[in-house]
Image (tube, rainbow, N blue to C red; front, side, top):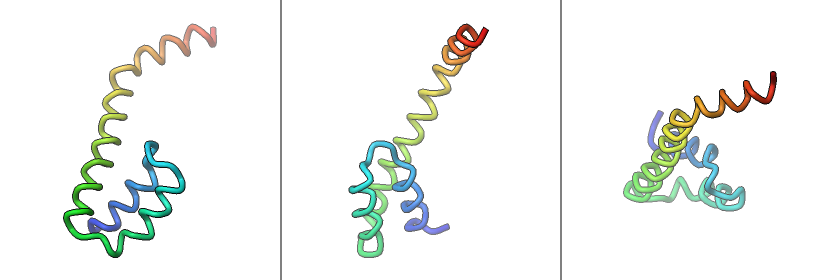
Length: 71
């Protein structure tokens, strides 16, 4: 997978970007410079990483709440 393909996936999976912004970015991937691809890719990868990290930290709390509510 090359950087443009990876960026496409990150854009599609982002929850910070609106649908409209995602569509505009997806159309511009082919004309973006390597620096632009790297910068946006790093930002979106960090977004995903922080979301996973946050979930890992709160997963036990979620499990406790769900267990309590479903008893």
